[in-house]
Image (cartoon, rainbow, N blue to C red):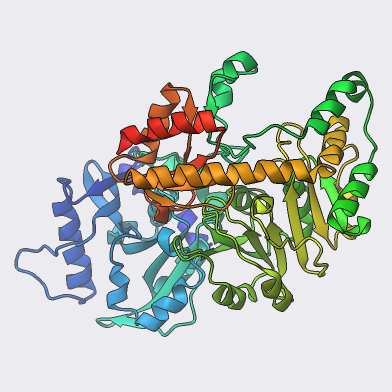
Length: 563
């Protein structure tokens, strides 16, 4: 970053006791008159891009602005266009160039920077970065993942300093001023806060209704709010309907229950086999996978946190599907801090494998969940993964057992393929935590800690694998119950995206998902706000977990109130 930006103070000496305030304003603000005068002075008089007006004002078409004010006088601003707005840069950038720039962006969460405009006396100060930082924080807080902008060619270094990249498209001229198209992946923009965050914080007054820093949460949100309601009081918990997580609605196999009951004392007292050797043997036999191609741990999330840092690093490029299980994005962005791009699944039509194959060739790792959560869509991926040899592929098959005739990839031994299997959802073992990874995993075994699967969990999983007939019957009942619920909601006039596993999506038009979740919680019913997975799902999207027939009846009655 240009050191000159730090040797100049943010304000002149006569103003050194003042701090500019950063705030969000809209077209309704009294400050819009000032913005339109500044816009005229700079873009008409200074740059000659518009004809000068006798009123000394130039209409600003933007809707949202991050503005810096000093004693209620605007000294700089950035205009922001949301994904649902028309990008103004489309007036200047050829359509093909814009398509190329959007290839690596999640279109539904790509925003536009417009009109980075600063009074001349503040252009060599930290105010430039303060405004850009504030705009990125507002965008991140509203679900944005990418930003597009056009910046003056003379200021390219400024954009590069905070992680901007310049797509390989021709330069643009507006009037006599040359511009370049620039894009930002917000997972990379943290360079700004690492370099000058403290100076920004000390130099401005933060009057924006979003946190100055990204949330310092140490985990990804997974639902499970019901534990806050019940604690470990299981009598109280039995009165709740927990449909915000996708635990199995049926109990484990009677063989599992018997083994745990009959051996409770020893299962609690003794350490398990160090590397879960009996469990690996049972998985190998049940699934037809060589033992050396299996590693196990306490659930799929444990495997993800152990394995991903050994497959990729901060310099890697990762392609995620969207919408998809949020833990993957969390690990990539917050733990590994690598470059993340997105490939959109069509909400109604499903996954375009041909287009995905072409795009995935340019990445170090592709992560997929099949069947997808939260959409429930399923694809036979055998031909897809056989053709994609240059990219590591991680396929999460947590819910695949719910689908009759589904073809798991776990026996397809291919050097770049890793198949993650949870035993939580389909075997009703969420509480004991068991998962395994199939693939070329010999080099990963040493990174799985000893005793990673408890003794009760190993025994439960082995017994479960030996009672496939029981689980087949239970999964079929869940399938029937889900279809029944979907059809009843459709009959009542609800829009439903039908599933394939133990969940499906419902879209509410008159109520937001947040409102529905909060209302149902008062009745002891916990649902998942699915709009947080992907903004394309809309503000009224709820993910419904299929429960017992009795619980499903109560769910249907409750949801009917929101028509």
